[in-house]
Every structure is written in C-alpha cells, then in structure tokens.
Image (cartoon, rainbow, N blue to C red):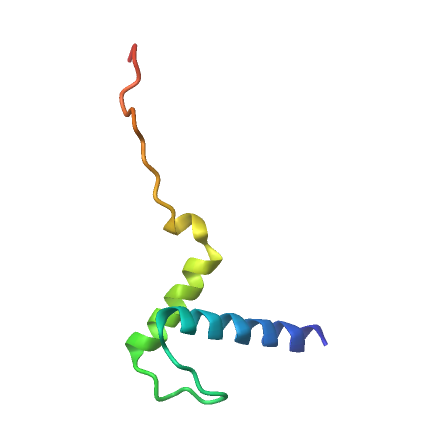
Length: 67
C-alpha cells in the first residue's frame, strides 16, 4: 500500500515539474520526449527538492572592520 502511494505521489510531482517547464507528459509511455525535455523535467524536480541550491545569497559587507 505504501509503495502505491509513493509511486502516485512521485508521478504527481513529476507532472507538476513538467507543467512548470512547459512539457506535456502522456499517461504511461513518454519515450518520445527529447533529451532536453526529459532533462528539464528532472532538473526542475531537483530544484523543487533542494530549494537551497536555487537561493541567491548576497553579502553586503564583505570586509569586516578591524580585520
């Protein structure tokens, strides 16, 4: 039962990532996708799983006084 729920959740996550990058997925087989399309879906999934990697940090004062 847990395996079925996990597979369903992963499929939904993949579909959401595909929608975000503008790729239409078919129900079932998607072997007709280009490498670029498949890679952009996978990349979007990674960005969604690891949001810290996509954050931009800005340091205003790089030199501390007294150093």
